[in-house]
Image 1 (spheres, rainbow, N blue to C red):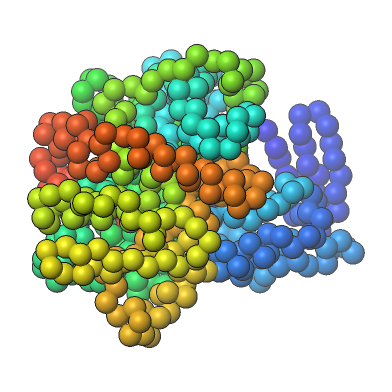
Image 2 (image 1 turned 90 degrees about the horizontal axis):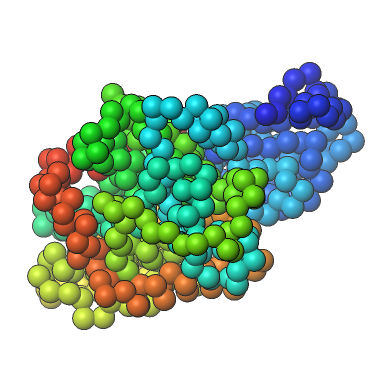
Length: 467
């Protein structure tokens, strides 16, 4: 464990002295920075400005040393930082990193008696983790991921791709309801916590536009402590629910007061891709050689719509497949909606024809780009006047390039990661989220139908201004 006091950093028995005026900012739930490690390169500042669009960071001279600091000189938690973690991907010396929750997990595992440890892994992790262990970019290693988590001590491992299908089912239903009843448009996705942070902190006028759906992580976290606990006859308070995510902002999301009930938070601990890699290495698990294992039944099945959730444009594509099927009763004839898939463009547009009407949609990667689109919408620019649905992901390329993911060598590596998810999608028999058989069974036994009262109680949330 680390302790930062009186200008001295203690690490086990070693003591490193740094100037008293340099500081370590531990105030954020998502990311932290240590000025003593900073080389003043300004890469983080550029990421914050150009990708996140937040202008939170600046390089300042302290004791003749150029170091990162918040632009206005306050703790990170008191700024409009959205926790996206794009700064951590470009910081070579490790001055800015994700908040490390591995010590919390290890302490819990050490005192495991009477507890049930449940992990869930995001769609992007199956390709994101592979590179760290020497596999070619885009290699899918979900079997080794599951096996490693079981070796670490988890009793159950579920696939968040299942919950991505669930999110799509609820989000598509919500969109259809808005179309039929004249709701607020355009509807914005709410699965990216960094985007939600931006809306709540800086543009709360958009809150009515946000989908009320929880993210896949939080939906599955809620199910683990309700549906799963009931089936297995486990006290939900004894469950330690751990999410493996390629996202630093998920750490902040997990602590939202709206995502808790009498059994505690929907998600107890969030571990990033990089943290999990360090943990696997520390446990001396041979990731390349460990025999594959399968996800545990109940929340294991996924469709193509669920797995492409990890790529920019994937949420929109999956939602349109399902919304079309709900409105027409038939599958969309062309399931591949290529104009909105991950690419270089920060804002992409497309349209789908449903029952004689044209539904115009947009996909944004990077909140800086989303801000440009939002400005046009709020100024009633005629070029975006008919938009009905907008996907926003804070990270370029989507979750495959999330702030907690393995650091991609170049843009092609990000594209290859996304390409691996789309290849999985194209090879699956079921590509529409509504066709997931485990999902259908869940609605039959617990949720009583898409958009039902029971579904809203467990799977939906609300947002509030933090400006």
